[in-house]
Image (cartoon, rainbow, N blue to C red; front, top):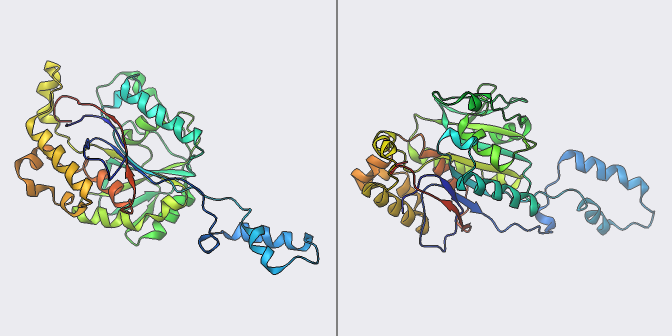
Amino acid sequence: MAGGIGIFMINFGRKKINHFAFYVFQHLYLQHQKHRLLMDRMEFLKAMAMLPLATCNMKLQDFPKLVEKGPSTVKMPALFVGHGSPMNALEDNAFTRSLKQLGAEFKKEGKTPSAIMVVSAHWLTRGSFVNVSEKQKTIHDFGGFPQELFDMQYPANGAPQKAKEAALLSHLLHETNEWGLDHGAWTILVHLFPEANIPVFQMSIDYYQPMQYHLDLAAQLRALREKGVLVIGSGNIVHNLRMSIPKLQMGDNKPYDWATEFDTWVASRISTGDYASLANYEQIGSAGKLAVPTTDHYIPMLYTLGLADGKEEVKQVYESVEYGGL
């Protein structure tokens, strides 16, 4: 079924998939594997400083146990959200409640991210960039909405260190202090993490690259999840504003046939792990061209898919239909 806004968790065992949002979920558990233990320089120095305090009969094999007492990082999921209208930032509806519930589950299960990276449909550049600013401004990149929406702020700090780590993972990424948090980011974060106490940074979309570029770049960034970074792709898979306006005026949410066709095709490609076909969506003809008249909202999905390792679950959290083609 074609959707409008929602949250989707990837589960490769499921047959039915809605295109609006999905959540790449890795079974989250801590594993004490010494050969995989990553320890930063500060933790190493702390451990070394403790050695003089140890008793003289401390055995060499006891040292790894001392090191393992340092903090562990839980591997974070990757999330794709169909963010819908900016008004969702203000509204209390089924979609925003599902975001709040998901955020509560993160907290309850001890999955609080060390940082959040958002790939939004609304930051398009020539070249790929990460924002390394310490402070993030709330960008109101829209018009024609109530003043209350323009007054909203999401005062999260930036995550310059994590952003720089992202840039080190790929030669394709460059650092910048431009941009901030656009509505593809903050209108969903205000519900997921309303306290705004988790550092956030955005990565831009190089709008001049082929689709495969984005899948490949995402694969290079998988290590971010191991570092506790929650990556969120924010866009929509079907996003045809021109075709949706008449239905909006009539209050008609029935999906167009081409939207349903494209949704079904995307579902089948995800279920088989055929991401290369998703990067060549035009192959299915008119349905693809109507569902994705421009690629800005489609590309964030490719980043979420590219961050998966192929062995992860997909779980649908929420789905809805908006005006047939959004």
